[in-house]
Length: 252
Image 1 (cartoon, rainbow, N blue to C red):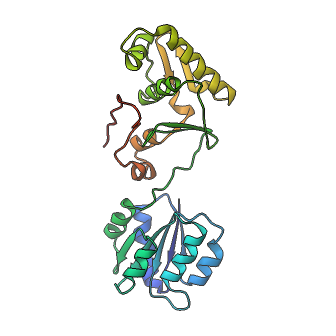
Image 2 (cartoon, one colour; image 1 turned 60 degrees about the vertical axis):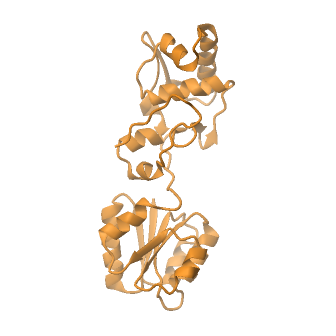
Image 3 (cartoon, helix red, strand yellow; image 1 turned 90 degrees about the vertical axis):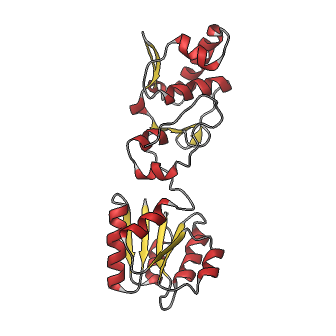
């Protein structure tokens, strides 16, 4: 995550940087006193959050925000100000929020937790799984297509079980009320082929106890949430695999 900080007052900038570091310890923080320099050096950067002082000479915070949003419409702009006279124009820019001076860790934390545009996790593995909202599977950033919709649901159930081996009887009971074990084997074969086609067959495990997901071979927002990854925590909006009736997600 990249966070841009701009304030023409050095002491205020240092205070803001200290608060942001405490709230986002893993973020890459880019601090500037000169707003023109901040723009010129970061116009090609993918900035996730920008904390901008409004009252600055030459290029004020609102003007800088407009330039940054022209590059990245989903950048989260958080204005840092002791004044309210820019509120209407800031609202037009769909800013994420305000931090009033003097800046504090608590104020920064409140705004970061309510970002308008959630920060997407940067994938570290080729196979990415999205559980928040609709369940989706991606390979190298592109949607992975199964031959059957039930194959995708079966895969979702194994993801939900986080590496536990599930036998044929339980899988059948989750997907249908009747006995469809023959068809279920077709779904398993479909999952195996789909993953093999993209070189990710090791993510699907067959054992004497049943079938499971190798959690170390996938990148999953729900798994990252349970590890306490702050980016994943901010992404969760109370929706988990919403196209299916059976999932229940345990939060902190």
